[in-house]
Length: 74
Image (cartoon, rainbow, N blue to C red; front, side):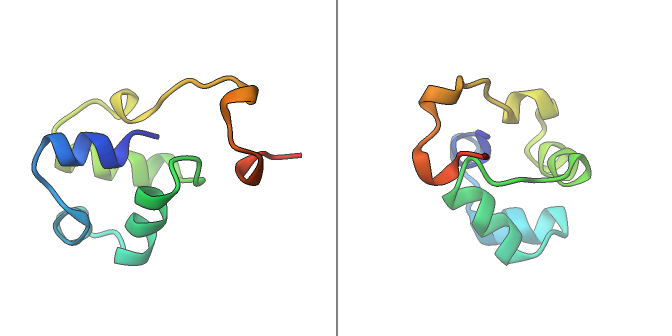
């Protein structure tokens, strides 16, 4: 996911994104630190709404070999 990159482009940090999206700081922090973190569609939609972008802009298509070992699903 590209939440961190898009938020930074919009000049928004973790705390503000959490507050405006009404998503817990810990959840936003997990997504921010780990772009491979599982997030529900409703969470992505709320983040996208706050950032004023389509939810699809927060997603990034990566091949399996691009995913670091510690984030791979087996």
